[in-house]
Length: 150
Image 1: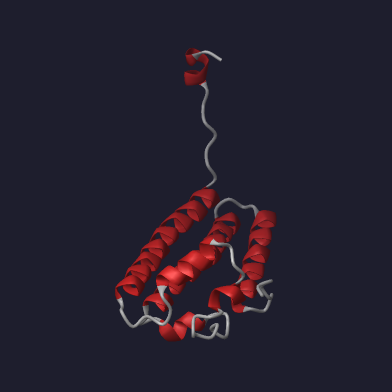
Image 2: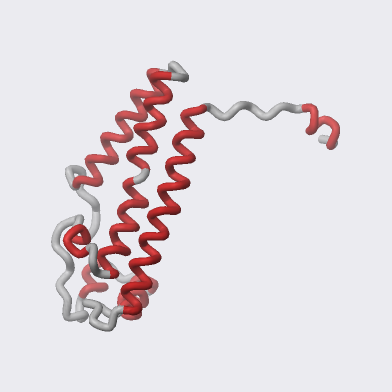
């Protein structure tokens, strides 16, 4: 296709629900990445960290299972899915909160997109599908739908 034919073609309009979803994911991911980065910096700079970040990262990069990562560190594997909420003042807790926030941000993004589908775009079928996806995600986040982690 020549340059002239391409310049005459119009790009399709992006649905508003997609823009809302994309913007929410974009800014939420940036915020969560910054929080996780700050948590990692605090972990590396805190001399009394519960587990050496070098040991933790090397075991993760080696592809070890969760139980193998915690074995031999002198620290028990944290109990509960959201252990970091009680450790937000530590680097590990802050980094894990940032990662969890990055996963969580999909929930408000889906709900905001569903709202736009119902109110502005008049796509109730896709709005209902978005609500169902949000409920499944909330169920997973709350631990109602268990994670397949050892």
